Image 1 (cartoon, rainbow, N blue to C red):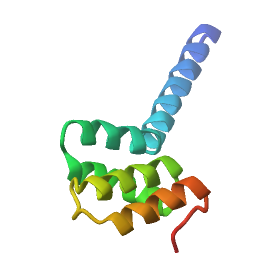
Image 2 (cartoon, rainbow, N blue to C red):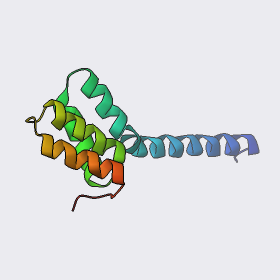
Image 3 (cartoon, rainbow, N blue to C red):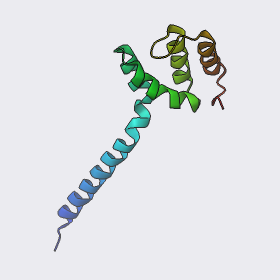
Length: 99
């Protein structure tokens, strides 16, 4: 026979595990832009590009601006002012996806 205290402890454990799993599944979505910023600042432009491009293509203005900066400075991508302007404009206009 299980005591009420044991049942409550079991429910608390299940709730804690569910919360942990939920946070673990959503953390990458939170981390995308920020993870790209950390990578960019340490000179890991390939990782920054990998983080930002999908977000930028989905309409994230911060990621779009950051891609514009990469193309403007030629960091991790060939320097291309036209491509930089495209990303800056999308970020400024809030138009969302490029497709």
